[in-house]
Length: 268
Ligand SMILES: N[C@@H](CCC(=O)N[C@@H](CS)C(=O)NCC(=O)O)C(=O)O
Image (cartoon, rainbow, N blue to C red; front, side, top):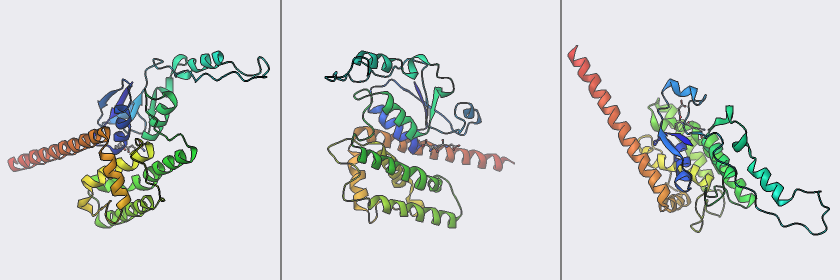
């Protein structure tokens, strides 16, 4: 399998984190999402994009269920039949065709969670249905309500636009801060998808927010404590360093391009 990746993307950061925490052999390949040819790989032209191998990864067979006493023979499937069904999962026998690639960070993670079990792929959603719903809710806050405003972190926009975007982001950070008495995740367990969605955004806000007055931790002690705990996770620390390196590289490339442009103009 192959992940089309950009080290500077908060969405790729979520998927890379889980790949590092898994034992799946997924090649992580750098992808310039500004390359028009990338549209052939992903019609949305977005990273992360996961490309599947055609059938190499069979779904793990479902756990054997003990036979129920008093049940009529043939009324339910036997454990063996269930196992066989598990093994004839889509990925093994059906050509993947149009579904050869999986798009959108959250969808990729949920697919991997459906497909693999720990320890191959670590649990990315809590087992408890309410905690699961909460993780998904948190991911949606980031994806639907914070994400659309984040281009102000990376580009220059008119001041009024930036002010409005930052205000909106602060509003949803307040919502996350006030989610309830529980922390988003506890030190006893490792982060789940919702935690990572927030963590990856905080990482970018911490590194790039100062220029535009985005102060993610000011007056938000719970988010601060959450982020500090997340940084103690070696896989998250690795993802953070990759982001820092990617930003440094992008800055150096922009500086070199500016210098080349100025040199060309001086020659004219
Ligand atoms: N909702 C998407 C967002 C992905 C996204 O916006 N990726 C950016 C990089 S951070 C990208 O590929 N942008 C290129 C484009 O929109 O043309 C996800 O969760 O995967």
